[in-house]
Amino acid sequence: MRMGKGMIFLVFVILCGCWDRTEINDLAFVTATALDLSDDGNVLCSLQIAIPASIEGGSRSGGEANQFFIISAEGKDGNEIHRKLQKKSSRILFLSHRSVIFVSERLAEQGIGDILDIFTHDPRNRLKTYIMVVKGGEGRNILKMNYPLKQVSIEAVKEMEISGEDVAVTLRDFFMAQASEGVHPVVGTIEPDVHSKDTDKEIFNFAGAAVFKDFKLYGLLNDKDTMGLLWVTNKLKTGRITTNLHKGGEVGLVLSQAHSKIITQNLKNAVQFKIQLEGQGSLAENTSNLDINEPKNLKIIKNELENAVRKQVQDFLFKIQKKYKVDSVGFGQEVYKNYPDKWAVLKPNWNTMFPKATIAIEVNLTVKGAGMVHSSFGSQDEGDEK
Image (cartoon, rainbow, N blue to C red; front, top):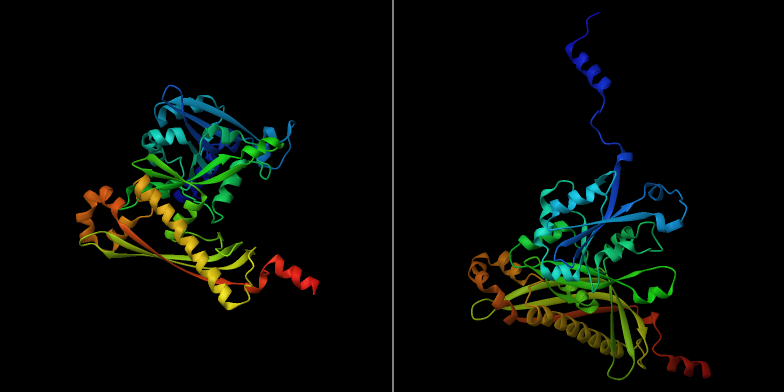
């Protein structure tokens, strides 16, 4: 019986197999990268590499401290650093499982354009990797932390970032913002928790956001500023608003919905915008003497909370407009989208025009769940005495 050419080719493929494939035992799985500035002015790159047994759920002598190890190398560019790192590993460095890249604040201030260039040209790097700035510290120290809730601490960072309360930015997001018209990149920030040193586990805090321009860090935003940024850019999923009432006491609102809209008002004589913020939530705290079951009191609380939001957003806008002079929101992008012809005129001078732009803020909150919080402890005590 004769065998066709197609059948002969199929048999040849089966017999040969994947002779050039890389076995899993030959790979070193990189879970995170840290980029720091060395004393010589070079980039110090550190890789957190997971030990396979810890990923598979096995146990090792020495406990959690042996779930990963770290290698570091110093160089002037990404290719040089990668070659040095590979020489320190007996296995091939596998980057597709990397979740986060940490950049120290000191390096970010110097500029990260050159070192990030390798991430756009090397196909081994995933652009869905998150990028964060380490506030007031070194990135490699975050890699060494023994986080209590996860075998690999970096997975904890990834899950906390996408929760909706903090800035979650990937390399792809960063590069797209850098290349876009009328907006500058923003990334999340992280810092070790100083109080965790009193415990047997180390934890970290998300510490706001970092604003970039031309691949350089221009300034840091605190938690309240970051909430304002997320709300104005329509990315806020949840949050908490707290304010002190003029009549005494404090009220707190937990947001369940938040929306925003930016309206370009005037581009002839001056650049003017209006931000419309809307939110819906339930009262979670009330230490005032106001009975919130009374409509007039609920209206007072609503107005006070709206004023608090307005003030919070004004403080955030002051930082990016007057202090850092970086359009992190994308007001220029709004002009570019809606009035491309006018943007062509404004674009060359936007760096000087944006800090002078007039930005009005309107806030409208819907306060729900009035019956869930008692008006005050004082009223409750009076009721008990009766």
